[in-house]
Length: 167
Image (cartoon, rainbow, N blue to C red; front, side, top):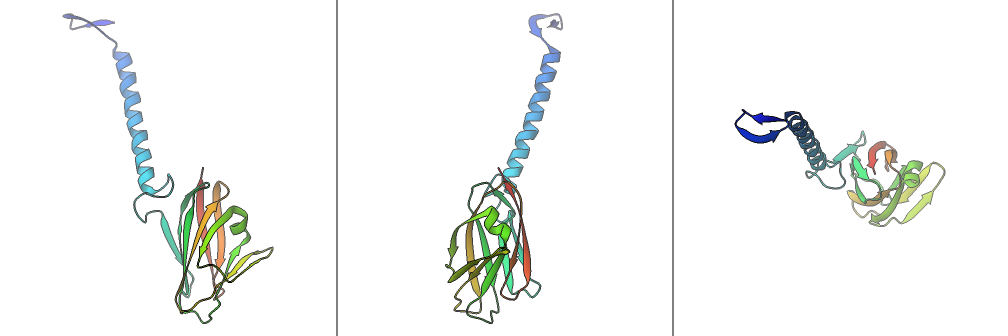
């Protein structure tokens, strides 16, 4: 302990002050990173509008899938599938086995006319009244980690959906 300039009898510990300042600066950086992660949508649903969403289309652009890139375990997510230029009134969507193994479907709007589960995956058949048709899947992931699902549209073209599920 030293006295300040030999004038006042104030105890000071410059080593302790230096450590405190270092801890404060590290804490500021960590808090800033948490805020940035929240804005980017890494902390669950939310963040800057649309930053967590991604869209993939088939080569012929007859099917477009919009989904969240990052999900939280047991938190509901939304997947929007748009079908264009339908040639049938009963379009089918096929999802690979990972879809029903790693995801729980809470609701499908509109409800499918028929659902068929096989060893390879699950097929949903719908009743379409127009050549453009939108389907919303409300899902909850069942496992933490990487999730890759293959979706096949009515034109038999596929889209791979890649998501990451946080705890």
